[in-house]
Image (cartoon, rainbow, N blue to C red):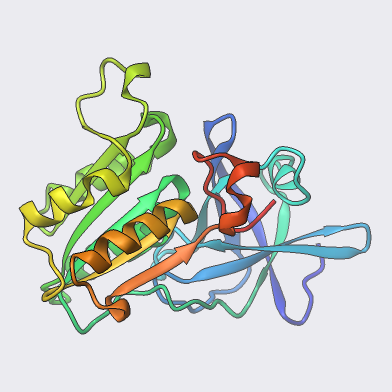
Length: 264
C-alpha cells in the first residue's frame, strides 16, 4: 500500500482474537511516530481508490516501537470488517499526526480512571509508560485507580492480566467488574457496572474532588452516568475528563456492551 503525504504505512505484525467481536492489533509503523500516552491515531485502509479512516485510542506506550489497538468489530460496518480481513503482513495507513487531549494531568498525583471494554486503551498506554519510566529510574509519585467494566471477563482481553500484574507494584489499583455475574459463577471479582461501584472504591482508596482527576472512556452512557456521580461528589468539571467512543444516540443501535471509538 502506497503511503500518502499525510500517512505512513504500517504492517500488521500480531493479532490476538479476544472474542468473536474483540481483537488486539499490533502494527509496525514504517517510521517512528511521536505521541503522548492517551492520544489516538487515525487508521486508514485503501478501498475502491479511496482511503477509509477511523480514529482509535492507542494502547501501546510511546516508548514501544509498535502501535497497538484494542478494537471491536461492528458487524455490517464499513471499516472494522475490513480490519478483520487483514492477515499478518497486511499493510494499512496511519496518519503521521497523532492527536488528542485525553492525556495524564500532571497537576495532581491521584488519577481515577473509568473504562468500559475497549475504553481501557488510553489508560493502558499511560500505565505502560509509567512502568517503563519507573524502570528507567524516572521519578514518579503518581497513583492510579482503574475501574474497568464489561459484561463478562472475556471482554477484558489480555489487559486483565497485564493490569493485575502492574497493580502488584504498589502504584496502581486495578478493579475489573462484570455486569452479568450470573453467567460466570467462577468470577471472584467485583460485580456491577462502573457507575455502580465508582463511589465505593474512590472513597475506600481516598480519591476525591480535592486531590484527584477523574477520566472516563468508552461507552457514552457510562460516561454520562459517572459524570453526574462525580459532579455530585463535588468534582469540578475541569477535573472530569471524557472520551466518548461513539455518540450517545447510537446506544440503541449498538447495545450497552459495545464500545468502539465512533467507528463502524
